[in-house]
Image (cartoon, rainbow, N blue to C red; front, top):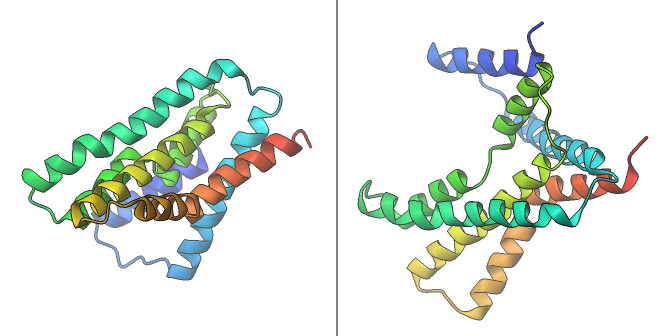
Length: 182
């Protein structure tokens, strides 16, 4: 039986291909996005309950390094070869360095629908790529603008850590890890 999440993804893809006038209202889109990120974090945290171990640290650091490295490599390419503005280059670099929660949810549902073993730590990987990718892209953009002071760095930390996606993913994972099993 096909997975419902994958089927809805394909429906959205088809609507885009045929240039449908399908439009989800912004309020509904925002609500669904918030619920999706919170659910992913909560589900991952519940799966991690009792499974957190120090042996995950090298994996988490490697994932975080990858999240930081992608924007560092991609931003100059986008600036020089594609000739995008600094803001557009930083934005695209951050998107490629981080992980789309929607794509993550579809891939997870697809794998689970086929009984593929998925480690509980994959949600942590999502969060660990998100944070450095956003921070590095913002830092690169601000450096390009000339605002490279310690105060600017503090602003980057604040902007990244208070991002709604980061709060919902990380917060959901912490809540799930602390409260499971139900």
